[in-house]
Image (cartoon, rainbow, N blue to C red; front, side, top):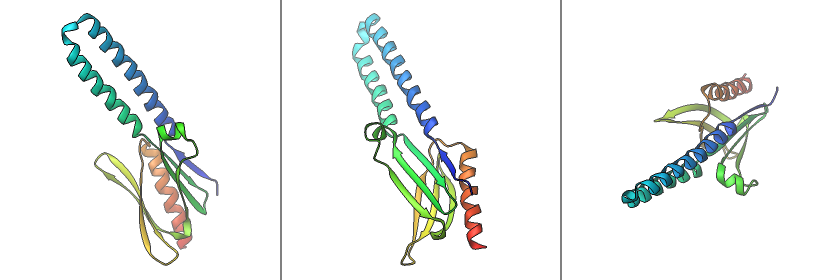
Length: 157
């Protein structure tokens, strides 16, 4: 079986670059308003600080998700985008043998989607793992689900 890889890395890069451009435009507009409307300086300072702080927090929360299915092992990694820029060796990575996976499903909770995987540990204890699926297309999410279901059905039969 061919290795199936799915990632949201291009989407995260696009969102990150867009937010930087938005920050620069916001700073330019605030600078122009600060220059031409001196009576509103305190309001501009406060609102500009809030907008830029919100953009910073948003960028800090961006998560890169990688899914790889080799047919025997599923590798799922999830890491913070900005942390990865400064420390590329840090990554939360799980390798799940397919014979230990009991079930998997994708649930949508409010606006977020999660991959929920139940696995059996060596002592027959069942554990439920939750993985956030940020900024993945419906096609990629469907591919993840089909990839897991196909392999789980192959193991059962």
